[in-house]
Image 1 (cartoon, rainbow, N blue to C red):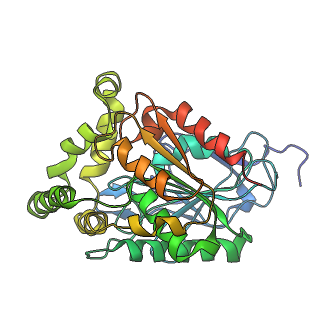
Image 2 (image 1 turned 45 degrees about the vertical axis):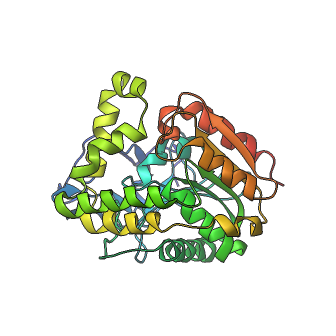
Image 3 (image 1 turned 90 degrees about the vertical axis):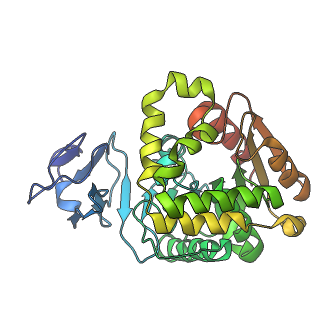
Length: 338
């Protein structure tokens, strides 16, 4: 091997042509890999959009200054993004689970930061991002079984053992189901901007949303989602970010969005949460209209020993609106784990 760690390194930055056939694979990934360690580069086009670059199990050695990213194309239902720890700390693997209408990129900033010491895995729920979008309706049980399948794969490939699950909104609901149905998979749980159940009025609102999507696709609810996801101040100050996430909602497959809406509408773990026997951090956004702080408080009160952190000036997607406060809350929680 050459003494120069950056010799024969391929840099993929911004818009770039793929090796070989010139197909554009990815628009915003910053990744360095050794040319002789890349086994396969695969670009797929679907639904008129460019899919993420997939690097199939290529990196064997750390690279100076490189962000190690594995986009591992495994079995259905999900396309996983795995960031290996930049230094071996022996700390637990973190698995991040996104909100309805989002994708794994929700976690990019937090995942890249925490990957300094942890292996971090971000994945797309069925019906979202690069996952398949089977016709629904879905159930929270089925989404949790998808997650259990993912965690079994990770353990088989990386010997991860129990992981720390970090889920926001829909991802926090899946985390609750996992903690109840497959507690051996989890070392700890972070439930952000989520709920354990909706009352009759809340379910009626979900039924209206489902009807709107059935008639007009996710585009029909995209503007309403932005009103709930981001505070007025964020929408005024960060219009480009809001526009990006609006596109994400509007381009979510109709079947996937509808299927997940049904799962959320019928979510109900409230009576079972006292059985959760894990360290749990519950995060709320003080300005969250979709899952108000009272919903997070109910979760924290139901789970023995759970901690509640309310983030000021944050609406539903608190990890995007107040990333520093969100990361600080997660890091403080991780520091308490043995």
